[in-house]
Amino acid sequence: MDAFDRFWQWANKPLESLMRLPADLHRAVMELAPEDRRDRGKVNQAAARVDRRL
Image (cartoon, rainbow, N blue to C red; front, side, top):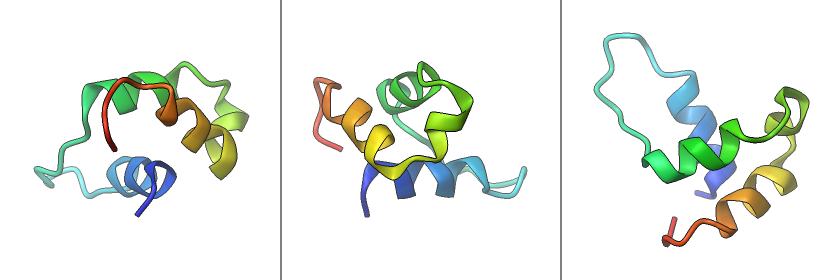
């Protein structure tokens, strides 16, 4: 599962879900323009810049 899948799985989770997302991945994706958050390449590229293995 890549960063794009992880982010969208978390974003679409049920409200009662306890699923978590690393803060650095959330930050990297949220810094993108809303339309770019739907682009797998741009999300994965932003996540790759994070100093953490995702």
